[in-house]
Image (tube, rainbow, N blue to C red; front, top):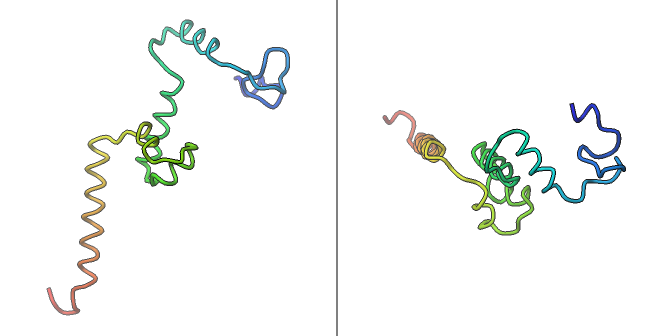
Length: 111
């Protein structure tokens, strides 16, 4: 709905000028939370969710750091949170890779 109604270059424009970005979103965010009834939701929660999903999809931490605009991996680790299932799948991937490498080194005819 908001996208169809946009009149300028910005989805969240400055009041009175659709070609200027909204300078500060805290007030709008607070009003939206109050109207929706959602409690304790920070804008950075979306950044954490995105970073976590990006890492779980296989984006390595160096690329993820660049996408998030961070120059240090430590900052990325504040945003990307790995689940136990994601960690277990990473180990399973490593095991499949290792077994594949071992199969490549077995001489032909040896089992």
